[in-house]
Image (tube, rainbow, N blue to C red; front, side):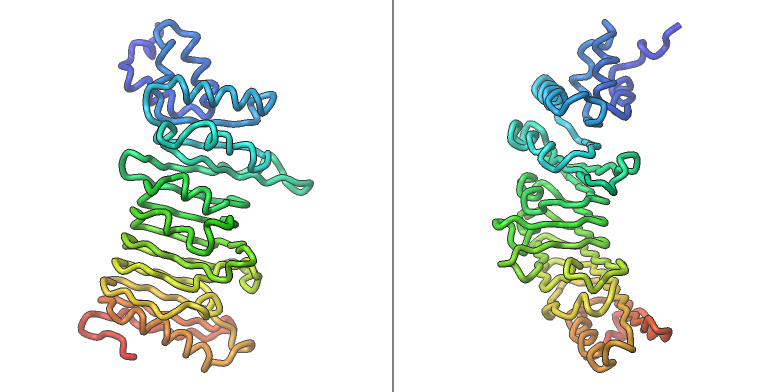
Length: 319
């Protein structure tokens, strides 16, 4: 006896939303008299472009899925080994108000690319309520385009192992397009700037949590992420991990609402002068002087480690 068909609609929708491919979810739904229209209320779109014989069939499926559905999407996953152009039709053919989502994906190609190892790029963003977006293992994200299409809905953004690019309009301040953003994490990312843009700025009037991490081995690469300015007057938590050279050009910080700060930096004494390391570090720490708790660690990659204990309200760092 089939016990699944007798389940309530909300449970059936939950099951359908977890199928790895929405194409299978739709096919399963329309073949059943009981489920025929149920797919229209599924709140997730999982798309594997490789399950379609042509890109046009994939486009047709997505258009029909979006135009005939009766509820807002709150989750999208997309897998492809084609170029970045493939997914942009979702932005041009459907306004984000109806999609409630921004779509991007890993578009790596080339003779050295193994399709069996392609990485799934997951995004979560909702325009109607608190939204979050996660990007990881993405070869090239045109950051200005992605963020502007969100229309300021995101409150949480995490970029992990991403190579970011800027269009001419985005400039070096891509996060200014997100007025509601209160949590930003830039983890082991790279950035390719236009020739006219020499600075990478992080700004957010509502930003309360910021984490910047850079542990990539080829830190001297010109594409390595080096933030030059942070404008976040409401920031409460700041975490910075990486080489001293990544914060060399960072302007002096000013976080009047800062509660917690953690700075773990590495350097190579065989390549740089200790006086330069001290100057860069102290300039950074001066901007964190309002923190109630400060964890500072300097590590010489040759071997020695210099660690300062957490700073408490009664024992703040001196300039």
